[in-house]
Length: 332
Ligand SMILES: [Fe+2]
Ligand SMILES: [Fe+2]
Image (tube, helix red, strand yellow):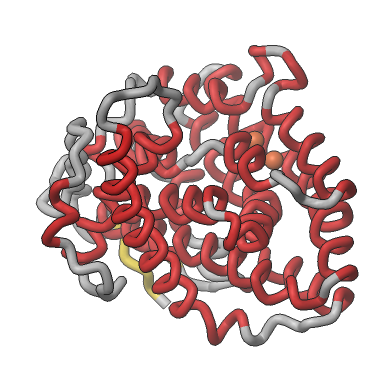
C-alpha cells in the first residue's frame, strides 16, 4: 500500500477541456484516412485521435442496427478501424510485457500472483479514492462519476461477448456472474441501470463526450477490444477477473463519498453493492474460471496476466488524469 498523500494544488479545472475529447455523432470514419496506424501511446495527439475513432467504432459495431445499402463500404471502413484497434491493443500489450513476464506459469503460483495484484497492481489503492471518500465536493464527485460512466463498457456485455465457446465450467461461472449483473431477472437489480441512478441523482444525463477525458474512453476501448476479438478472449477473461478482484476497494471509497455528499440509498446502491458482491464474484471467478483454464493449459497464464495488467494500467492512467484534473498532487 502506498504511503503517498494528496494535496490540492489549484482550483479544480473541471470544465477546462483544452485536451477535450469531442466525439462527433457522425458515423463517418473519414479521419482514418490520414491516421497513422502505428503510433505511440505516449504521443498525446495519437492517443486522443485513436480513442475518439475507436469510441465511434465501438458504438457502431455494438449497437443493434438494420441492413443498409452501404454495408459493403461500411465493412471496408470498419476493417480499417479494426486494424487501428489491433495496433492500439498491441501497444498496450507491449507496455505491460515486462510486468506480465513476472507472472508464474503454473496454476498455484499464478493464482497467488493474480490475487496479489489487488495490493500491488498498477493504480491500486490510489489516493484519489481517499480524496473522493473524504473531501471531494459534489461538483468534483459529479465530474468523476461522469468519467466512470463513460469508461464503463458494460460488464454484462463484456462477459456475454467473452464467454462464447469457452469450456463448460468457466462458461457456467460466467453465466452466474452475468445473471447477477442482470439483477437475476429483475430490472430493479440490474447493475447497469443502477450506475445510471448515481448519474441521475448527480444531474448527469447521457455521456457528454466533450466533458470526458480520453483516458476514460481508452479504458472502455481496451475492454471492448479484448472482449470483441476472439484472439484476445483469454486477455478479456483476465481483465474481467481483475475488475472483480479490485472493484470492492474502489467501490467502498466512492460509496463513502456519495454517502457523505447526501445521495439517497438508491443513488449509493451501485457502489455499496459492488463493495460487497464483487468479493464473491472475484473468488468464484478465480476458482471457477481462471484455475480450471490454467490448470488445463498453463500457456493461458500469460494472456490472462496480460489482460489483467492492461486493465489495471488503463485504470491507473485514468486515476493520474483525474488527479491532475482535480488539481491534486501526490506528496511522498
Ligand atoms: Fe456489477
Ligand atoms: Fe461483479
